[in-house]
Length: 72
Length: 135
Image 1 (cartoon, rainbow over the protein chains, first blue to last red):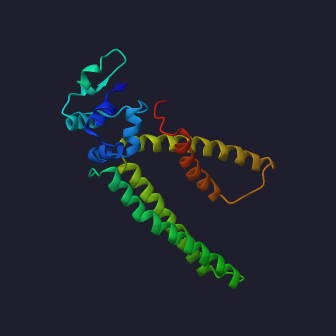
Image 2: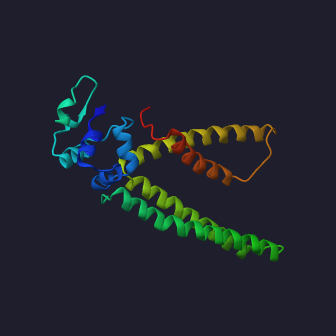
Image 3: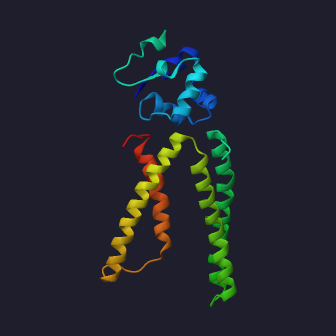
């Protein structure tokens, strides 16, 4: 699954560790999600969406979706 | 289960892990020393030595289990793969060694090496997989 987590994090100037602390997960978890090695559970996806003030669909999408609107 | 952050889970794990390992090393050293000074070792001392060595290890296994429950979902998935690989390899090794011993091909050795192999293989699997969580 693709996601816009890295660009959203970058927009706020947060490091992976800062984002991990805000989500209560490890830095490795954030890295794995950003690089597409791990797809988060629905509760964690909701936490991420809530943190960035976006909907889940704006941050996470499958290969057929369009994530470009998340960067706007 | 009260949800805890990954940092809290790791802190709770290390708070128990380090004393358990220190206790284990002290117990092991004391037992080794006792075997040098007492020959033969009295029964009560053997029982005490067994308890002193094994109790910290049981404590470690308990906190390992607790960490597996409290860690974040990515770490849990990593641990699951570690347990799966370590369990399968250890089981395969146990079968091979067991039948090898029955057939007189492999010499007898202490059974605790299976536990050592399992724990080391679990960590090795997590390290080698390097964050790959997809099958």
